[in-house]
Image 1 (cartoon, rainbow, N blue to C red):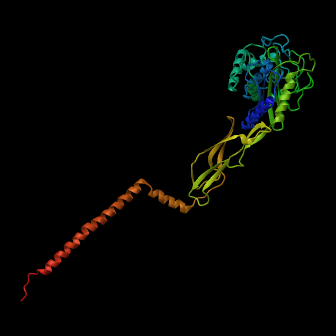
Image 2: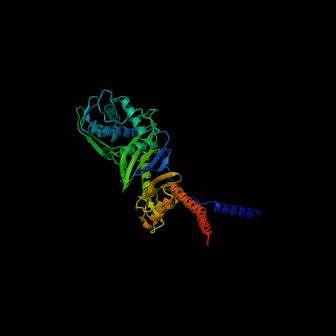
Image 3: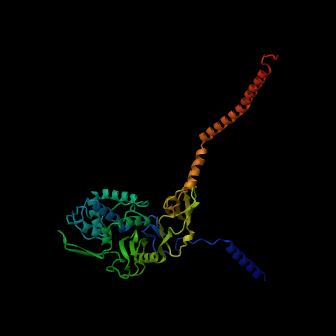
Length: 456
């Protein structure tokens, strides 16, 4: 019996605690996702909204994903007009410096000549390391100078955890980055049509050169093509770049577009499933595909603020039409949110620019602003504009002008002086005016009483 009573008391206490605990507001996040890798990130490119992150700011080795930065600098130089895609490039005697056995290559030899676009394709699609040396020497005047450009560009993009020592990504302890920084670099590179063209190409053909026959190669990204491994292609995939070294593990920066939404995923430090062969066990492909699918399935682009609801009311004077004017947001704020996000949980920080307004008020006049936040994160700011015009009453306006005129200090002083003057004149008249009348009356009677004549 005592045990039952004790259990009942504990159960009742637990229920009370549950009732007293406030319900947590819905948050714009989705729980339950985990990536089988050391680090990962998933970002909606429309607004840079991070949908998922896992050790996203931890130091990692990028391996051949490095080549995205090399391609970005090359394409920028072409875009600026310093080079052309058709420009013939000659590989120098140092083309294969610091290459290691087993590293991916297209066997470009010193003295070989090919167009700049073909060199770029060799670097991005089959991940040829020597092609990156050629690009570095062409664009930066040398590998060291190009590496300085890489690090400067990384800082420009906001990368705070990145340091490059080479243009290809072969291992160096001081060559590192983060999943978040890779997203920043990939997001910038994907803005260029040439980059998108190359990273979505399943295959590519380089015509015969002065030192080689025709080269035909396939993309290393199994989300794009099943040429190398089967079973991972993703119909919405739009790139981007694979990477592998023993130190970095298996890595993939990927992108996908579905409808009007585009996502970038980065998965780093994956391992091959133990005991698998052939096309099985490539977790960096399966995890990247799963992460992209999860992002499209669980998140959507939602309007979190628009002009459907007035948010501000300001008193208006000098109008018979209305005594206040309301303001609504000018435009919309959209965000990528979980499908079950509760929009009403967002905080609306409203700021009014006026305590009162004097008519007339024009429709569309900016009366304040509203900032949308959720748990400290700002989602955007919109002007608050007047919904309707408010006309001025001429009678009230003129009365107000009269009132304001007479409320001026100098006018009050002049009126006071005038009043005092009038009072003074009245008093003076009453005092001195009456005395003069009495004085004139006494002299007249005396004259008649003593005329100086005698009566006979």
